[in-house]
Image (cartoon, rainbow, N blue to C red; front, side, top):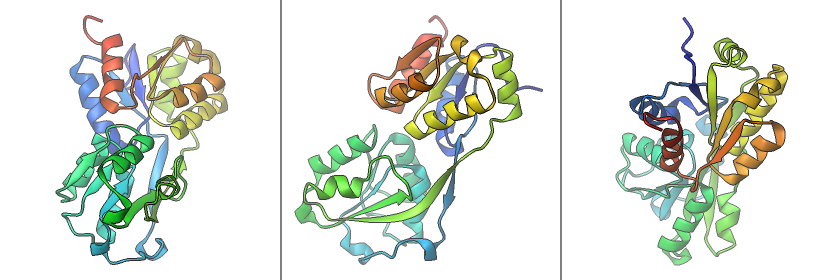
Length: 252
């Protein structure tokens, strides 16, 4: 049986990140379905760049994705090391791994950099940055310009899926999808590519997009012609969810 119903909102997040979104939207009476467009592959410990310091030397660790959290454990970092995350979902994952001092920037990588500049100084010691092999914003380079010493360790890589799942394709063809939520620039690029690959561009004219930032919306709107494009006022998951719920929730 198809999981889709008329007026479904299609999410495109990783399985770990999608959980809170699915729960919030379902609680608001909005039918939704998640199809991850990027898969994360942890690098084995021997493939990670060697840590340049003892774990006690770092003043804090920076992570922009829940996919980096296992790397914290691989490095055997102390559980009271301050962990600065890009958002609340990643912060929750870090706490589940036993880290006690976790602070969320509640935004994007630029917000995380701003948090570091506000609450830390270069004199407090070096920072650890656990990252993917490819990143949109290199926090090490960004913060080094402000005098911070940042040790970047690549601990995972991401890979785009090559095809949409058959139920998603069928739902798009049957006009059962009302909107698509895009939470990263890379996800937006992958979604647009897959729509063209499956020759579904004509279906997008009846679908709304919800984008976490203007930069993501620019990518989505450049590639596809949507019925309407919605952009979160701030790049926060809670703001994005409120926007979707305010548009489609009960009584909207």
